[in-house]
Length: 193
Image (cartoon, rainbow, N blue to C red; front, side):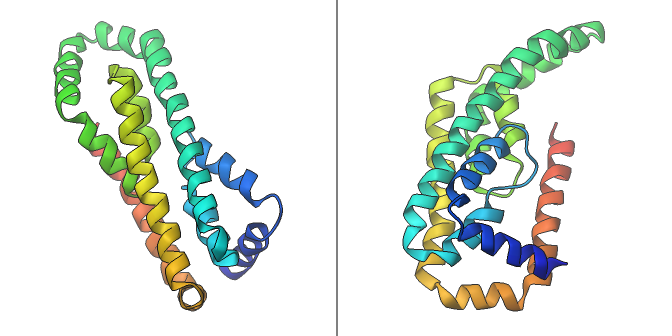
């Protein structure tokens, strides 16, 4: 089954619809979609190495635009739903203390979420919830997401065919590692918030 999925992703990566699909997944992942754009970015760069810079740019721009949607979700829905619940339970003061901490240190959290497998959407939504400075949020998102996607695409470009053979040879263990990292990110979110 993994081999069929890999073959399908490689076929999609070589198709004319690949850039639009990459853009859609990158956008959605920053606000609500659970899978990272790497599932398309990696096979796309492997299939067409000479386009690595374009693909990394598509990922970065789309992801940052999606991050603004995540921010808006946090800003708009929290005021409508979340704050009344906190006030009902008398926990608004604890939230206020956490907002002060996030104002001081949240930029580092956003950056780490942008460059690691941590579910970035959680931080984009939370940043909107606490009203994190939008300009700082934008700058950190561009730097962090750009670093992540350009590093992945650049390494794939640099190592080329050997990396494709490595992926095909170790597809099963790599998939398991990817799942463990993805699930670990969601577990970390649960214990952090």
